[in-house]
Length: 353
Ligand code: MG
Image (tube, rainbow, N blue to C red; front, side, top):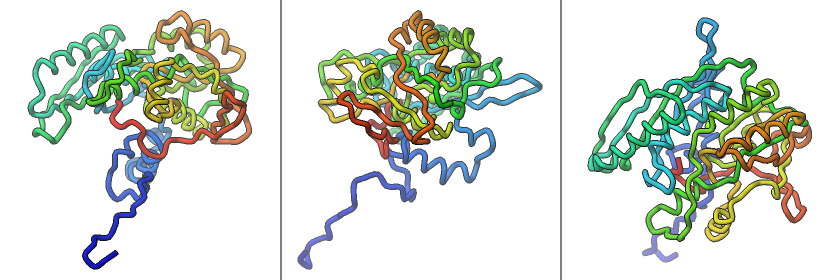
């Protein structure tokens, strides 16, 4: 380096855990998000319920068990094949309640709008919110609107809270997986992430992949009616994809998991786009798929129930909960090798939900 040259920035591009400033990877649902929650949020606001880190918290008020969840939606673009930020926000909230065995009842939503958002776009999204609530049997009972300067947000962000009634005890929870349990997936993975990504500016892949965003409440209620005590864990496959979700469950339950790659359903077009762009579909988000970890003796019965619902008709068993390799998820690949499925470090596809 001569005296006139600036020093070359040799900073390594791999995800950083220094937690000095927020980076996009902190929203990934992977290791960076985990680090943010464990080192910044929980030390300051953690409590017994929050520390459980389930999809929704269950609290008791005068002997009535209530599930409560909150979520924010920052997806870009706000319209994508098969859906938009409005329906996505309702489906996501309902699904988090359903994952605790709750019957979703009420939703509140806050709409943070960027100056310049066309009213026509907003109307389409509000109509989509309304339609998703009607279809899912929930009522939007409280809402808020805020407008920020152009550039201070990206078109529209939505924050929701959902409330549901819980009538089963114990409710499905992330720490209840037991060795011997069957791991069921409700359908093919990765459609939502790929649908959003392909709709982003400059990515014309001539594919017709639609989001899988939908409410999974009906199928979950049907499963619970038949085998509520045998359904140990339910988790919707959102940020972090299938791999992220399984890791969360394995860690919370202190068990190992073994997954057969050949049984994991994947749409050929999703597979093709992932191969083209170097993405691993096991880490791509869905918004209408879930994992159910159930007593092995009721697994076939659960598959039969799921097959009657459009959103879960391709459900299948993909693996087993094991006593070995605790807190680790091992994938048996199609060619016979084993590999550890770790949580994603940074962000594969930012702002997907
Ligand atoms: Mg969830």
